[in-house]
Length: 114
Length: 113
Image (spheres, each protein chain N blue to C red):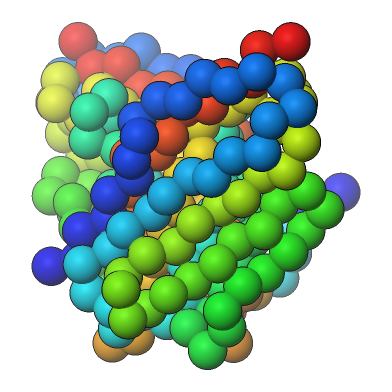
C-alpha cells in the first residue's frame, strides 16, 4: 500500500531532551515536507526537501533540523525541545513539485513537551 | 507574504444540500492550489489539485474552481452527505518557489442527517 508513515504517533517528552520523529514514504517521491498544526494558527511548513541532500526552510524552521540522506526518509530532529514545540506534526510527500503533483500526508505525530 | 483565508470557519447544512466552500489568497502568482479534507485526529486527504493554468477540476460530487485574477478558489460539494462532515483546507504553492506551501485555516463542515 502506498503511504507515508510517521513514528512515533504520540510522544510526551521533557524540555531539552533530543528527539527524532521519523517519516518514510514508499512511493519513490522526490519531494517531502514537514508541517506543524496548532489551534488558531493552522498548518505551517517547517522544512521541505526537493530531493536527496536538498533541503530548505519553510515558514517556521526555528528549533528544528532535518536531513535527507535517502529518498524514502525525511526525519525531523528537535535537538532541544521546548514547550512551544508542543504540536501536531505532519509529514507529506509528492512525486515532485514540477508538473504539480499532489501532496500526500502521513497520519500525524502528536508531540507534548513538558 | 502569501496569506490564505477560508470563510466561513464553520458551516452546518442539512443532508442533500449543495454547498460552496471558499478559499482566498493574496498573491495571485501561484503554481497550484490543492484542496484537502481532514477528519478529527487524522491526517489530510487530498481531494483535488488545480494547476495555475486550469480553471477547474472535478472528482465525483466535488468540483473545484480557480480564479487567479481575483485570488479565489471555491470547492463545490453536490448533494452533501453526513460522511462529508470534516474540515476542508486549501493550500497554495507560489510560482517563485513551488517547494513552499501556505495553508488556510480551514472550514469545518457539519452535514446533519
